[in-house]
Image 1 (cartoon, rainbow, N blue to C red):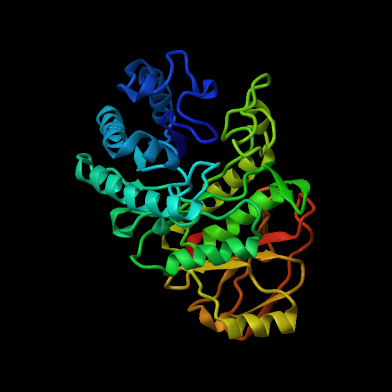
Image 2 (image 1 turned 180 degrees about the vertical axis):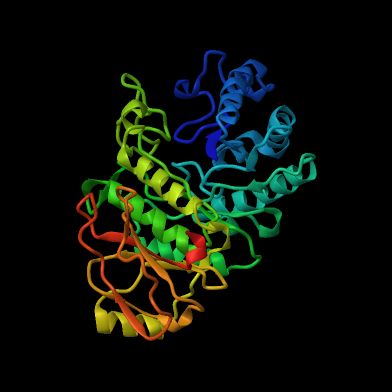
Amino acid sequence: MVQLVAGLYPHMLAFDTRGESEHGFPWLEEFSSINPPFFDEADERIMHLISQGLVPCILGCWGYYLPILGIKRMKLHWRYIMARWGALPVIWATSGEQTMPWYLAKNMDSDSQLLKREWTKVTRYINGINSFDRIVTAHPQESVRKSVDEPSLLNFEMQQTNHEKSAKQHAAVALSGWKAKPTMPVISGEARYEHLELLVDKVVTKVTTADTRQAFWSHLLNSGCAGHTYGANGLWQVNLPDKPIGDTPNGYSWGNITWQEAMHLPGSSQLSEAKEMLGNLPWHLLEPMMINKKWQHEVTNLFKQAPVAAASTKDSSLAIYYLIGLKPFILNMSQFEQPMLVEWFDPSSGEVIVTSEESINNAGNKAFTPVSENADGDEDWVLVLKQKQLI
């Protein structure tokens, strides 16, 4: 799946030249009518993605455009998009950062509440004309459940899990989504974008490859393995060598790395290795382990190590633990119904290390210790326990 915005982009207003294509903008001046030649260009990109086996997740616009266009025009905007691409294998995302007002708005809280109410109306309308029954969600500021008054209008929860939060915080946000009602799949739609420049305590720092990788594993295992969004600075805004997107309206710059450089950042390859590893396992049966506080407290005190996130199948034929640290981690093996094979997966290189060809008995406590730092020199590892029939 690839997220993309149908012309009404973030960082700018509708007729900013940074958002102009060869045929102009998605709407003509003063929003007098939709501009079909703009969407002719978009067709080429949509069809190319689909031909490559990718599913476009189409965001109609950024959330703050709703009061600019008004309900009537926004419904027309969405009706046009759905008529144009609805027969294709796509996902509808009503808007980006749906309840975020315009960057320079003076009444952020009240404007945010207004957006939530009005986008609920538009979402209801989208469902009403969704003749091909495509999946409907939204790109939120935090949680899609907080982006509308009726979460049941949406088919899965997309979360924005923050570019600054730690791996443990990503794991906690994921688990909260898993537990929330109504029940729906949970995906991080925006996590720690690789190479993104952040201003933390007045110091500019960059999101590292390790940050991006750790956010992936922490959120994925604790959210039921429905999916995850990789993002990189330079890619999301399509920075060109001579034409970076520039500052936000409130004066912030995320950095000027080009998309040509960003496409070669190592994080995307590492997540690809993770996808391949999980694809060889029954990933769709994994559920968060819901580690209880007492058990986690005992492990931390005794062995100074507890998993950041963990998932297993209901029949205990497969269990995956994500660890950050090189100290021992203990497991009560009696929780498994059969002896288990043990593998260590290096999330930085994709290498699989099998410590023994023999299964470990499903009785008593067993300590597991990462063999060393991973190939990137970091301390995160993935511990995989599985029954022989899963080889």
